[in-house]
Amino acid sequence: MSASRRSGTTGELGPEEPGRESSDGSDLLAALLDGMDAALCAFDADAVVTHWNREAERVLGWTAAEAVGRRGFDGWAVRGADAAEVEARLMSAMDAPGRQVHEFALLTKDGGRVLVRTQSAAVRGPDGKPAGVYCAFSEVHTQIDLERSIALSEALLEDASWGVVLVDADLRPAVVNAHAAKALGTGRTSVLGRPLGDLLSQGVEELESALTHVLAQGAPPAPAEIWVSVREPEGERRRCWRCGFVRLASPLAEEPVPLGVGWLFQDVTEARQSEQEASLARFRAQQLHRAARAAAECEDPAEAVTVHLDFALAGFADHALIDRVADRTADGSAEDEEGAGRARLVRIAATPSGAPGPSRLAGQAGLPVRYGEGHPALRCVERAGSVRADAGAVPAPEARAWAVSRQWPADAAHALCTVLRSRGRTLGAVTFLRGPGRTAFERPDAMYAEEVAHRIAAALDLMGAAGRRE
Image (cartoon, rainbow, N blue to C red; front, side, top):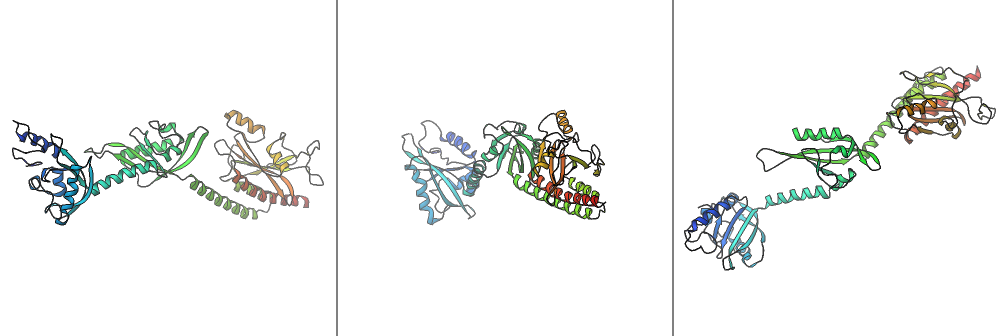
């Protein structure tokens, strides 16, 4: 006796067909019930147990032989004080439409208590009248675990404040939550099935390498921070994502079958940029301090000028030039060759072009640099402020021509000209240059350049005072 009562006359709910043995239907029904993963039992109209499958036996410990034929659960599967209430709730399904869901405690064979959730419904006989009740039940904690898993999945994909992407074994997005779609600059459906290279222009190799590693060996021990450039209609957007990964495998297979990777990420760009800016500010402050100490040891003010220039270049620019205003009139204004008021600038110091080394004095005193009208250095002197200039996104030959035409090294692509002023007088301009592989100068760079220019101007003032004494 396994899943049902076998008497030769009643093996199932409702009457037997004439001339047919009941054991055939009972055996088939017992096999079907025993093969199901859910715990199942059935009661006739008098609340007598007629069916009890193996999953019910696993949950409560009572065998089919012990359960089938008992009336209700009184005295064996529930406490006596609760038996009437439990039976009434179960049998109420005979008179109610659809399924009835209840939760109550059952007793196991060894005396333990199990909280179960039941779904019961009426069984109709050939005449359409209620002939009994079938009941499916499961341990509540198992059901709750399942519901929590489903709720977690839905929350991650709908309400999470970080990006969640389920990537398949081909490294293509299969499911994307709203936050991730926004971070990728696309819609939740339009991103599905596309290569990551269509979405990211930089950082895609590092990301795909991490996903491949997770598929092969499992999740890394700690989150990884990856800098990426997101493709958007307006252009590329540089972001830093803190990424975590989990390998997804089928729980139904005997051996783990990889389904893909769960990729979770959070945008930490602002925090990382703030850290980088703070670190850069500390480094530049240290360079200014070191430059001041080194310049204080210089007996020659001209040497102090080049010392300040060399310390300023570290991590800031590739080249630097210092031009001094020449032919000053008595009232302190600068004139051009025709006396029209345009400044003439004389190169007095520069970093070597094409080879590393310290800055050196130009040795061209009195020979003006042939700057064209509107040159950034001239504009800087006229405005008594900083001027930035860029070659722009042009081919390399055009960028070289742009730099050479401005009397700068051929590999210059970004320029920052800052005025040199001391005691209310304009002494000249210092020009910092970066190559095409570096970023353009920004406002924080201009502020640093102004601090460097202030120190260089002080040294130039000492040079002028020394020259006048001689």
